[in-house]
Length: 454
Image 1: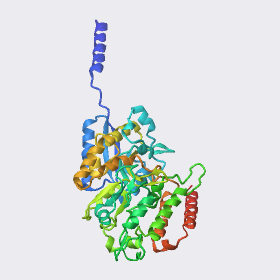
Image 2 (image 1 turned 60 degrees about the vertical axis):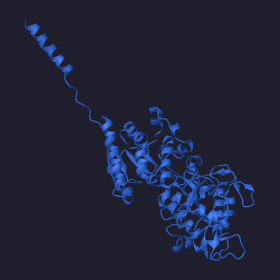
Image 3 (image 1 turned 90 degrees about the vertical axis):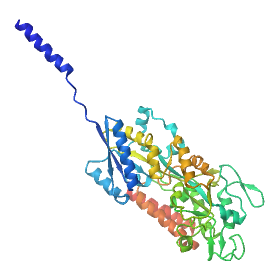
Image 4 (image 1 turned 180 degrees about the vertical axis):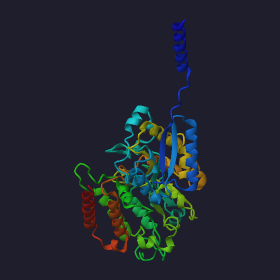
């Protein structure tokens, strides 16, 4: 009897163990850091918090938390402090190349996660994916993109009796005499001179034109960096990671000569004095006194003061190739994360299901092909007079590779040296510089910066 009772007790205990509730496993916490790029305006913060709430409501195994820098100005220091304190976030973004370069070497290679999860990279143009392929691997997936386009003032073209720039790649430009020519930077320079007008009404192609009294310019690289301007003639890995050598390529030298001539010989581009003149405020193109501006798509943010009708065209070609320097923001995962798979799940959510909501609040254009049509529709509603929104998506195929903000040792110092070179070109000293000597000096200085950084 006692034996039977003991057996019964044991069976009861066993059954109790089998039916006892299993303690729920705590969700993996993924921390999302915002501020290294855009994202710190209040409306953006509200949207990001809503995205976090929606994610957490649909995921029991992952808890997404949002960490905000007080501003973009302090974001690098804030993130550096978190990393140094051994409390780094898992995901950072949206962030562009320059912001990400402050933490070069610390980003996770996403290629193994893409492969293991079966994530479909064919959703994006290959040219944009290539922007994120580096010696460290695939350090990002395209998200928000801003290709270089040609903004042009319709009214100034009409006034000059000139045909508009092409709105399709490979289409020739029709000159005033009816001849068709390839749409190159040489062609742009020729018509830009006709569109550059002094106070007496003479254009830059006429005798008697006064370069000291220009009231309208034919062309400008609006709000541009030196490396972006150089990349209009082709991207370049000017720093060789294997040899450690810095080389200014010949097509960059050709682009610098195009700019020097446009500023000081042919006078169709504004120098610094003109750029800062009250006549050309709030910006040269938005003043209505520039016929063409090569600038990234984000410039649609800042045309509110322009009363003249404007439209979009494709950028010209150089030496048989077309290159559209493209600004690009995305989300990145720090290599220090303890939960790469869960972090990748969040990243693909931000770039997928939540993408349209986030892109809208950031004022950005989607790299995701399926979202580009509604994004263009939104732009058309904002600027109903613009006809050629169709130039945006094809321009992404011509993104200059590598990106004009790609990392190299001594990046911050090097970028300042590029900026100093641009100041020299556009300043009053630019009229008399020995360009070949200055390019050689730029190369030597960049080499010294790289050597010291290494």
